[in-house]
Amino acid sequence: MPATSVLSDPHTHARACGLDPARLPRHAAVIMDGNGRWAKRRGWERFLGHRKGTESVRAVTTACVELGISRLTLYAFSSENWHRPRREVDYLMDLLAEFLRGEIPTMLDNGVRLTAIGQLDRLPAQVVSALDAARSATRDGTATNLCLALSYGGRDELVAACRQLAQRAVRGEIAPESIDAEALRSALYSPEDVDVVIRTAGERRMSNFLPWQAAYAEFIDHAALWPEFTRDDFLACLREYQGRERRFGCVTTS
Image (cartoon, rainbow, N blue to C red):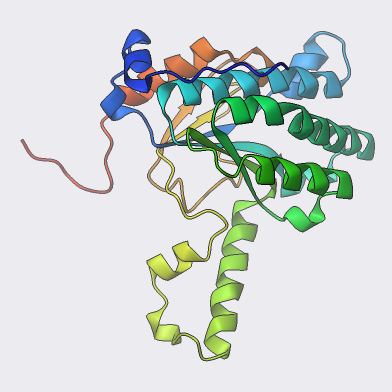
């Protein structure tokens, strides 16, 4: 994909899209569902759905840059996905490495910083190499942080955080009674709260995705399968988000 800059005034762009720039999410997260079903409906192999889905990744990331959304986390590959057929997993890993290498010029041109969370040590060598190169090349990006959840599981993240805190307690660095919500948050792969979780393909499950960070997020399901999910679909989800009254366990009074 050739490098194309979309950097402009985010507030102006948001208003042109019918959005209130002051009420956009700071952190949007997307469960990209439906690649296999999209391909199956066309009589194609599942892997062609995954390749088509990369176009939706570009569309949503570009929209976040245009709108000034500072963080976008995409559920790209779960820890459970390792149990899929070996041929599909191998294809996904090759596609991921290809995508990471190919998108560096566009990310640089648009101020995107790439990060990743999950059990990254489980990824094959070619993916680790491509991921390291992309993260290093884009480390100074300030427009949008595109975070890929790779080999990620929310329960795994919580277990890893608890182990880290337990090890620190054993070493005498912290007292067990001092461990609170903020201590646990600081030990997570990614401590940033999520404002909105969008899931495609009409599904309404969280599927072990960011359970701590999304505790008070708004959840929006969209009927489109991920390869069909467009920029306009993403904007429609943001409009629905802005139509919600966010609550955090409190009762508001007027």
